[in-house]
Image (cartoon, rainbow, N blue to C red; front, side, top):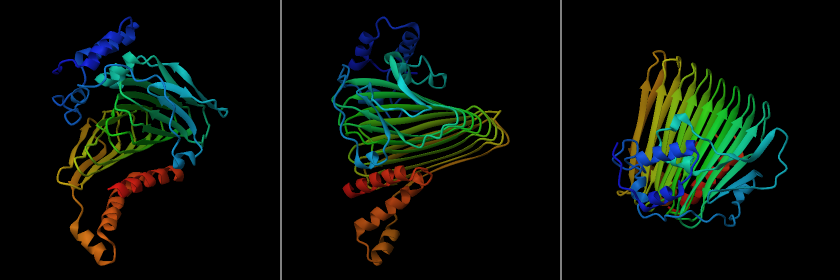
Length: 407
């Protein structure tokens, strides 16, 4: 693997990495061997972090700034709000309900499933503390937990979160990426979903256009657990959201959906790897990308079905809608199957709005802009169809409508 020449920000990491404990030093050495990924590396060829960070500010982001007000539609959900501002964890003084614990804990030393990821290795080296959340066994926690990632100014920041949903528990998690900062932010999130548990996760990314963002969500899904994830990204200078899900026991289910709405020169990359180890597991994954102007939509999804994962049912589809000649979409769905009793499928499409459909709708009284907006909404509708919380589903639809107004 070719390593590109070091950037000023990488030199700054060298200076910061003195006197690290052994496990963090090992992670930093792994990052140094690889450097920031670039377009000559398979899996990163459409998301060149080395190029994006070549001129990045070689200093930490400000430790803390005041958080902007919470958006009205999210405030209406009455969530438990936790903040990570420029990498610093800000836990508000909530009276936490019985069976739910929050706190600042030591950051993880490693996550074997993503040990080859250079930015994850850098995060492990640079992050000392993490936001820890635990839902006790059997607790059905209906109040959404909201983690706001707020980034301001320039510079770099790192953060980690760990969530454990114990046996038979249920929880709803919302993550937002906000702020007009132009810096680089890395977040590493590890989830343990125990037997019979369920987590519904919603991710909303709407930072300013100059941010460089990398997030990794790594769920370990145990027997008969249920994981549902819906994501919406408006992109930024370079944004990559990764999901690395491991089904480690039988009978688990996952629904993973994502959408990107891109304008200007914004870039969004949804990359995922779903590893099925336990038998009789079910996965559905779908992605919808809409790009106009010079927007760039990237989707990379991989199902790896181990020999032990007999009777797996895994299906993936990625579709893109390009609204201008300069917009771009790149998709790479993959299957890697070692079991012999499975049902697996994948597909990908890209195209423009159907002029015949627009003509048909205009013949029935709609203006051209309204017709185009209606078709785009219809194209995106399947992404949010399995969002269990009606208020969160409305938040997604509100964000789509707001983007369409600007388009």
